[in-house]
Amino acid sequence: MRSRLIQRNLRADPPLALRGEGIFLHDSNGRTIIDGSGGAAVACLGHGHPRVLEAMAAQMAKLTYAHTALYSCESAEALADLVLEGEPGGLAQMYLCSSGSEAVEAALKLARQHFVEIGQPQRRHFIARRQSYHGNTLGALAAGGNMMRRALYQPILSDAFHHVSPCYAYRERAAGEDEAEYVARLAAELEAEFQRLGPDSVAAFVAEPVVGATLGCVTALPGYFAAMRAVCDRHGALLVFDEVMCGMGRTGTLHAWEQEGVAPDIQVVAKGLGGGYQPIGGFLANRRVMDPIRDGSGGFMHGHTYQAHPMAAAAALAVQQVIREEKLLDNVQAMGALLEARLVDRLGNHRHVGDIRGRGLFWAAEFVADRASKAPFDPALRLNDRIKQEAYARGLACYPMAGTIDGRRGDHVLLAPPYIATEAD
Ligand code: PLP
Image (tube, rainbow, N blue to C red; front, side):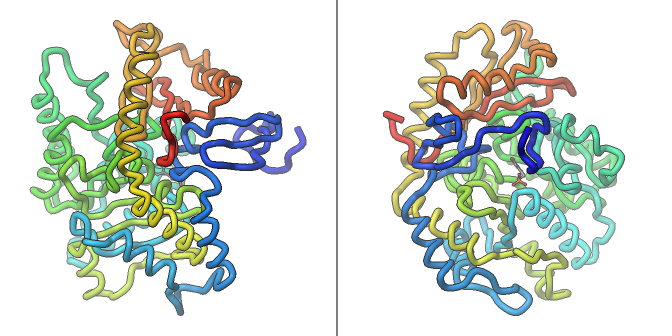
């Protein structure tokens, strides 16, 4: 033990990442490692992309900070204009902060403020899903359903957050139930939760279009999000999509919801927005949400010292320009199809691989002790840690997670290569 820095593991110091180059990381063990998950699906352009570095250097020479109480800045304005070009799904305004959790907090508060401003202050409840992850700050943690992350803090989490089942067909579709029946059952469960809480007391339903950290790249069945939207619409509640991990091109379209045909009222983004070049997150919101606030109190009752930071916005602007100009979504789709085929080919029949799933360049394998019963491994084995070590020993950084299955531990490994990955990579 040498490090004074609080590491994730307080008993062992990790190696130092010294240099990043494309899909590779070079570290203090003298190893060159394929950054196969971009951390937690962050490094969407890989490392050291020259266009992003140039844009950051240019911004740094011009302006590194100006407080938003007095100023906006060029890079943040340009980023919002680019991301909202054509108002995708009616999303018309953007808020920028420094992380996914902060962005989730801001989105929840925006939903709450919206209802206060339209004269419905009784709307204080949020319905999210079991087995979801929305971040580690207290509001985001309360919204999330990852029981292992919540357990320690349960007594200090808000009681305004409630959870329904995710759409997790691999484990939760009943025997003999077809896809449409399963979706109808989930919609009925959401409807029942609205009724239990009082339908006019719910502010929003919050969900990840493709579940990331807790379940590992779980896509919803066709029609699921349309059914959820219909329940929200029936009761005047907002639909909030958390695309922190699955958004900004990761699944092969700029927004994961495009493949569901359902746009949210508020969309949270982060990781793929800035690709890790700077800490950045934010939300996009439609006019339904924003106009009453603009015409009412005239200000979002929320803010941070580093919101819409010039450097973070300049880096993210360059990342977003590169994704568009280099037509990287086409590559995400092509390389995603290849990754799927290889995963299925190499692992599809493995006796401990229960499910392989994902979309675009966002894939996961769920490991099970027994394929027939889908029984997870004994948590004491800490399978995810061992997979991480074995993969590293073979030159790959992947993102193994201990998710929760019915409150117990489950094991998934997530792969989220950069959008620039080639077949040779
Ligand atoms: N929401 C989702 C879907 C996430 O995957 C994450 C992080 O993994 C977060 C929110 C929190 O983001 P951050 O770690 O940047 O606070």
